[in-house]
Length: 159
Image (cartoon, rainbow, N blue to C red):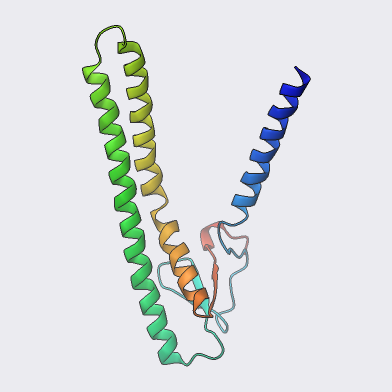
């Protein structure tokens, strides 16, 4: 009995540590508005970019345009895949529920309900995190080219 409780406690501890580690990797967020002398804001986004010191202005603009285009395409593709997979799971679950009969019907209805819930949740999560995926891709692209990227949202800031 004690051995089983120890294993459960270790699993819970590992899950909590994993959640803490993953939440710390979400965004490169600032609580104070970045200096306009150092960082330029991408209009209508919380993204602020500091140009790499060894990059001239024309190359910086080209890299910025290239990264914005590629991040938008990647986010769009991921959204289509997420919504498509979620729709497939949801419709499969509803089909199982609608066609369940016989002595296995309770099991089929339970499985169909779970499939529908997972599918619907996948669709909701995909649509809710679309902006995050675009900004994350933009951050990775720009930082890969040597620029510094931070996120500042004026609605959630202290100053």
